Length: 268
Image (tube, rainbow, N blue to C red; front, side, top):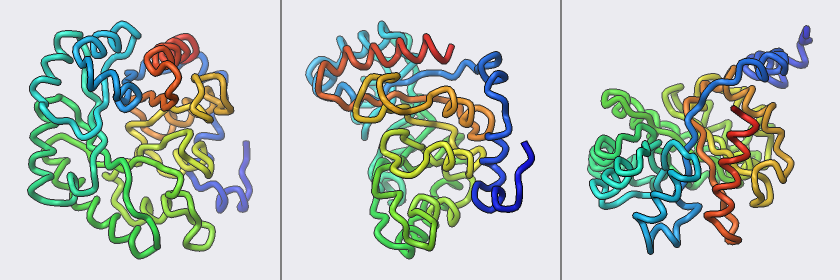
């Protein structure tokens, strides 16, 4: 494929690199990427029966878990170890990352859990100025995290894809004004723009990615082109872990198990 100047301006070098990789190469050389479950998916039963649900997650075929603002981290670590599970990291509040005292505790918690990705789950992105200020604070936190062998990042939600600077989304303004050390955890369902384009646009910053089917459906029952998306994540995005998030209230544990089965059958 030979891109013209218009292609370069529209897609960026990262996207072009992903687009130029033949699909058959991906199919033959799919990487073994660890699969985690975002425990928000089973939050009600996990709160009521933590030991049983942790064991159930392991039985579903997940390699580990990702938490939401974890507490009692030593207890959580014991349950992980008892079931042969790893920790991907956690979804956190803005304050858990940008407040210096809270951030110290966040780092300590993740050392105990063994998770390296400290991801802000949601924050205000109402203006270009706010996005730039957030980017500065996250860049500072990412520098501190790196000294501990950890990472700081931001998780995608629908409001992050509003246009606010010409053709740029809030997600892009934040990304463009933060250092490459700040991770961009794409969520394939929450993205109202183009998740393929946006992962490819920021090479190496998609070390941890959320796999969520459109319409809160089981993976494979929606509109995501998973082969195409995995290809981009693994050739350009720098992915190290995938995390499934299943938000339907219809049999959450059964849905999570089906999503894991789909991933194992189609990704390898």
